[in-house]
Length: 298
Length: 273
Ligand SMILES: Nc1ncnc2c1ncn2[C@@H]1O[C@H](COP(=O)(O)OP(=O)(O)OP(=O)(O)O)[C@@H](O)[C@H]1O
Ligand SMILES: [Mg+2]
Image (tube, rainbow over all chains, first blue to last red; front, side):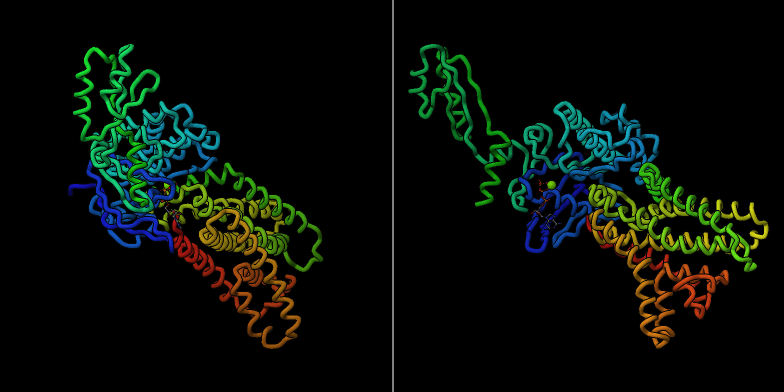
């Protein structure tokens, strides 16, 4: 067994709506994969099929050599649905103890799990009194139960503040280091950029791009931005040497193709004393995302 | 087993905090006390002990109250989880759907049983304390107790089925009230008017007994009244059903919970989160 999750040629239709079309994907142990795509792209649908909650129209899914929804697969997978609202009458501790029991785990771990997601102090309060982010953390805590082989997390950081997000990704890093595979969806591209090994972009139910961030950058071949700060008085000189550069607030902004990057950098370095600073801005994940989803739409 | 018990414990806790436990206990206790005190008025000396009189009026009350309590506790069971989004999570856990239903059933049924035992216990205490011959009525009270719990199981099953079918708590509540009105109130009215119109014809002799047995609430009333030989004292539908043998109403009382729970399981199996 090489991969924890294998999806091949998965298609899902809801009547007329094609939610997923021919999606193939595999996730290796210890790998963190981010699923990106605009609203309605099919991210949640894909996750539900992986969990066996809804049947696929065609195609195949295997989780640790088991079929989705089979007892073996359910034991191996942890899930965090989008917008899960736990019963307001229960306390966080009671809710987590219940989920521990359902997985056949020791209920005494509940407090430790809640502390891991920063709910130690609120553990004995009713979930009805929790803030939005606190409720989301109850969901995270239950997803950590029992060393899952695969975590399927649907927008896990929605509602979390920036510090909590970072802590959450540290938790995920630790799980991944122990060999757990992670498939998460998100609309917060910047955090995904730094914290996942691989990015999968869905657009209208089709997988339009897949790879590590450098991979995607190379494939998209989007222009690189260069910001050159000229020493006083040399601005006009340099602008003549660098065709296409425009002067913005005393700095020269220019773009060049990925393939011409080194050559352009060489030219700039040759200017020596005439410049004081140089910044290279590679295309952001936002740019890549826009590029791939637009290319697919055409 | 751990999974079922944990589900039951969690559901019981939720019912406790939602005051369903308190509501069920208080309602049953108050109604039982009122009926048993009212039964202490001179009954005309028919040679019937006080407890038997109380059991007859408790039977009429339970036909309304037990289904209502059961439906109120169960209509949210599946639809509520669907709406909160926790059903998809629950179904991703290594727990079978029937285990979820059984866990919820254990919690809800034990609340009903608690309420029934408390109410009937109070009624018995009042009756026996004021009239020692009431001990003779104990067997019929015990019969009323277990058949009430079975009636509760039937309507819990019906409530889970409606909850699975409607997917939204508000829709499920509407269906539950509709079912209660239909089976407990309108059904008897319809039967009575059919009998009056039929005037002793085919309907009254052939269809009517079957119609009574087909309704779990009517079968429950019939069973308790027939068993305690009180059909003559009962009003309306019960009185018209002298001819139905005890084993038939007993079979209906025993089979309905199984049928309703099977229906609930079938409906729940079709739910996609
Ligand atoms: N039960 C359903 N019945 C009909 N159509 C559905 C159903 N569930 C999802 N869809 C459709 O499938 C498509 C994909 O939905 P999905 O929830 O997977 O999107 P998503 O990528 O998770 O979006 P978001 O970012 O908004 O969460 C949408 O067009 C949606 O309308
Ligand atoms: Mg979604």
